[in-house]
Length: 182
Image (tube, rainbow, N blue to C red):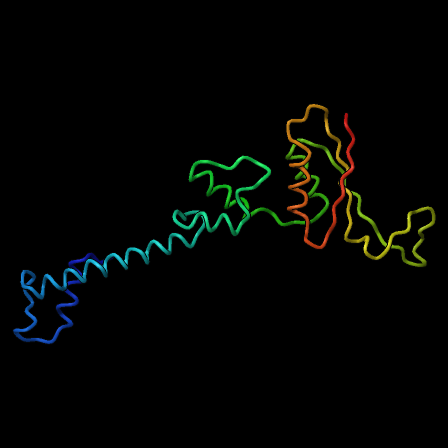
């Protein structure tokens, strides 16, 4: 990246030739160009900083904006304190697996210290052999049940579990929770 003197030299070279615009660095015109060179160097450095701020793993000044967009800090867990931890939380939030499969919810619940199964509901359709099964409407395809087996004395609060399942669930779905304490 050019420094202030490099910008000043460029400005002097752009001026028309003649005694009014001497090429000497110690002249009044040379010092005037150096003053502008400082400003051009500062603007160039800020432009380079902006490139660093455009990425979550190198952001510094724009970290609060990145966090706001990503919904951080997460209200369900204590906020990270160090800059590195905040960046790590941001990157995790932005790159977390968005897989809405039942197994991904089972894995999420397991990571929080619980065992779970997922029950999905299939709407009634004539001629498909539903004898003895509950009848569900067409809207039931958006509903799933998270059946949680929670050991007594689990350190993770149930409200945190529900928060993360709802956070991961697609917006058009409606999860409900059933708990069994063991």
